[in-house]
Amino acid sequence: MLHPVAALGRLGTESAFEVLARAQALAERGRSIVNLGIGQPDFPTPEHIVEAGIKALRDGHHGYTPAAGVTPLREAVAAELEKRAGRPLDPGRVLIEPGGKPTMFFAILAFGEPGAEILYPDPGFPIYRSAIEFTGAKAVPLPLKEENGFGFSAEDVLSRIAERTRLIILNSPANPTGGVTGKAEVERLVAGLAAWPEVAILSDEIYSRILYDGREHASLMAYPELDDRLILLDGWSKTYAMTGWRIGYAYWPKALVESAVRLAVNCHSCVNAATQWAGLAALTGPQDSVERMVAAFDERRRAVVRGLNAIDGISCVEPGGAFYAFPNISGTGLAAKRLETALLEEAGVATIAGTSFGVYGEGYLRLSYANSLDNILEALQRIERWLQERRAA
Image (cartoon, rainbow, N blue to C red):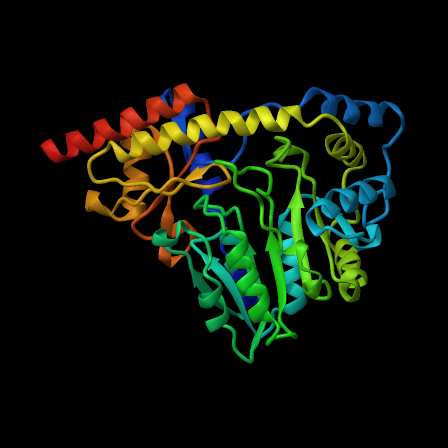
């Protein structure tokens, strides 16, 4: 009998992929399923990006690249981040990764160990807690509350820092809630962090360009006082509809760059060569496709919030960013996981239980509106009809 190390038993998972598999299995058996579960843009990757990837292959980019990424791409990422930072940045501190998760893992591995504490958002992306617990560190949740629009509170974050805190994970715009933390709150947090100079910050800004109603992204990159302890995570998957290309990036503190590159060498060697040239075309090419995609998401956002608030037993605050709605379902009398299962199996609508994103997600569902408006309206009708039939039974 095999006896793998105990740490493997502490690894969690990402329920969106489990729901996706169940939804696809039902669809293969002939069921009509509307999928509002997976967080993936339904738009194709813009054509000029696809062509850049094809050209890279035709030009012979078939081999290994430097572990940190090809130089032109690292330079382009630094130039892109300078727009947030308002100061020159060093391309040597940019690390190109196969998506956003490696940066999460590397940052958590860098600071997580038995006896350490790492703060993470709850409800939040489930891999945060999974990776923290894998390292043996204590995962300390930062509750995100509906009454705050699911943005983090600087006061709350600061109140949870302790002597054993090694890393704070922040995410705005946020998955799964769509919550956005404004500049004033970010500034209060930065001011308070001055009292904790040994605490690192991982700022997950993967949805940085998906914002609504004139909101501006409040990036922690804009605060040079955090420069020696801030790890910035972003990438191409959401902004450019490139989830399957598997490419993301990070900007590391100078003291950690070498360690991060060594982790990359040990983990995946380098990112797919052609994908990196496609990523360069995305950053340096026309941005109108991003603007069109965000405009479409905005239309869907308004439709899904309006539709959810019209359903008896459900209420939904308007998300400020990303492409998720996080409705309060407590009025239905059903636990989140029970409702997720029933909606999929009986109503043909894939959603994700709020508890998949943490203990503070009970009483909520996540709906992704990265799907067509017609499919969203159909899903809302199915949800309302199922709840009505349940009450009538």
